[in-house]
Length: 167
Image 1 (cartoon, rainbow, N blue to C red):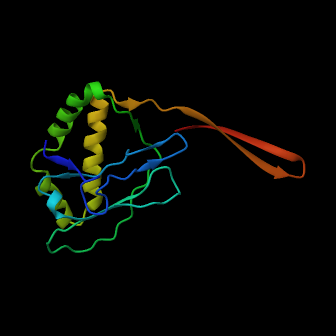
Image 2 (image 1 turned 30 degrees about the vertical axis):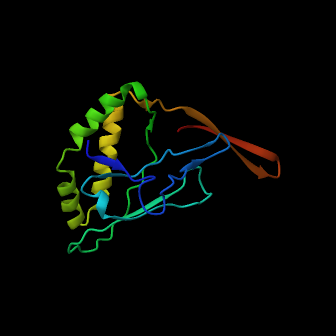
Image 3 (image 1 turned 60 degrees about the vertical axis):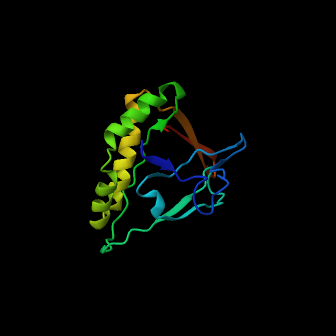
């Protein structure tokens, strides 16, 4: 597989800094992957220390010299997402599934999408490959139901609004 992890191998992260910190512990849960052809074009990789989430933002830049026109687009926002759980015993099958989806023409495909100014489709393609490989190999967690309680203060005490949401 010609995909490499940037964490711990690129500028400003030579130590492989933690990407997740919580009361339970610290770990490197978030990764940026690059093909062998793209890896040398990475000019920046950094893990920002922001405390608005347990996960820190990963910032990276790739130098691609080409004539590209800028396109304004609104990101698609979705509230539904599956949680993926890594299963080491299925690592080889997962890798094979990813390889079947992301073939060796990955660089050319992404360069073409980049030229078209369609970065969102690039991200969708990677997300789809990761998610489909996880689904194919039974690495998707079932969504849990959570109970959300909201209290509205008013003259009569409190009104409890209860609703169940999927997470």
